[in-house]
Image 1 (cartoon, rainbow, N blue to C red):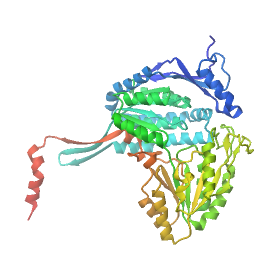
Image 2 (image 1 turned 90 degrees about the vertical axis):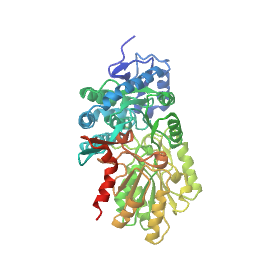
Image 3 (image 1 turned 30 degrees about the horizontal axis):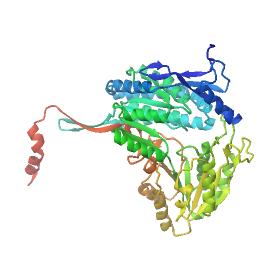
Image 4 (image 1 turned 180 degrees about the vertical axis):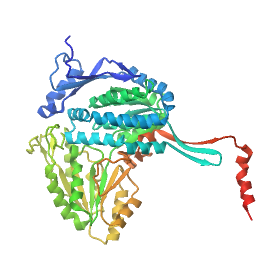
Length: 544
């Protein structure tokens, strides 16, 4: 048999700091091949993985392959993590958090172009690939690292006692990233590792290459450099259902970070609790952007175009807009004008932001529901080809804006009630009313959202801003007069309430979510009886 071409990226399972081969392979095809011929590309991938095509003479469209882990390998990964966790948690936080964070930030910056190139190969438009890399760098930047460290240990002094509030790692954390952004989501788990946990990551079969590259070629060498025990990090590729079942059944697993749909995620949450595992859910988003009457309409519209990035197949984009009637027409006009630069194309083109939508029936069903209930379609509404020619068989969808009149009853529209994972943005225009009534109505509408990932507000009045910041309870992140999806230091990238995060949902800092609070008192030798009864005696003695 001839050697596999050198251009082909090949990864085995990574378990206990060793390469573990598998009998089967998952093949990765360059995303450009899907644009050329979807059917032929998917057929080739299926034949390769079924062993019906010999891997010794692969076409250039095949850019990588990853070994598929069997159950024994998955179990070995968990056991290796369980063995490493006690020793790793005992490593000084300065090494686990500060040193690992600093080294990782430097390596990510050094390999930023390579990471972006792999993301493009897996189908992410270049602009969005670079956006993801910038988010990774913020996550491990010096400001964020200092925040993580401050939250893991706080110390106080009272008399001769040292009092600590510290977070202890949960132990073995398993992470199941989503298909649409596996690389950046997997990197979130590294902050759990910095908190003292050992980590097992599943590389999804749909896009395993980026996860394997970053974990094996960037994260693993950093861990080696700081002397982490073997098994601190383990990475395996496989189907989600059997791997999740293995994790649930394995006694050594403590936490499972799960990305997926709300319906599947809430069912998985129940299974986790029944199995005694901590569920950390990252589910659907249905983010609300509110545009008040004094908003900078041009900037607000620019932020709303983010709704169409990646053809709406990102969980953290704007999903619905609530707009003051005084600026509704101006906002619609500006938004439609600015949507003009959102176009399809090859993922390597720097200005492309739309991605293929291979199954579009939900888009058209949702659009028809909106039409049937009286919404106005302002722009879009059709499938199209790569050259933007309208075609019912096209694999791209036009950015589509609909206008829903009136806040009352807006949640009856499917496009408003649930996340739309395609380029369809509803603008809910309130009926004219006194501003005091509209303000209460707007805040009530935002809080009535069953989801809760991110919310945004565009307004200039400080009192309006304060009302929203104080009274909006949903969501893991709230942004005012800013990009909805832009990353910032200190703040979380994920996490939320309701159908976004489940019963335990909140802003997701994995280093915090995969640890638990512990109080500590360190005394040089206190009198126990005085510690129990002394406070009362002091109270009596201090009375006049």
